[in-house]
Image (cartoon, rainbow, N blue to C red; front, side):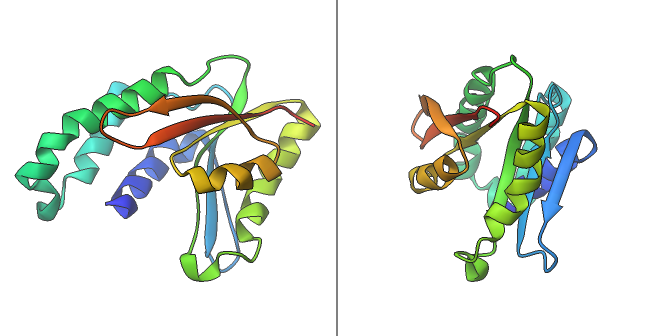
Length: 162
């Protein structure tokens, strides 16, 4: 399901941002350019459709939770700051076998360096508490905590340019 979600998210933002990868494609970061992070209702429906294309995801228990997931995602997006302009880190990931080698930092650094040169902030959301220290090492700080209904906590993180 995560593979489908990230693939659909990539298709949503590919023409509005930048994707940085390592040479061996073990790590990647998908960034939306300033002012280009907001998706349309149609794109959100396409994202939901991509998630439920597999028969195994169309089980009643999964379908019953889908409105709750939609509400949670919508509530997080509503709290995404519109101003000041910023780069949005939509997705970042490293193959588990390649973690701990600095590859995530390698795919984050080109845009973070550009943010610093241009005086532009960066923003992300993390649903994994163990990643907060990692992002803090890159200059991000927690600005909000969102408790999703019957779901994980999502931390909004902001990085001012250096």
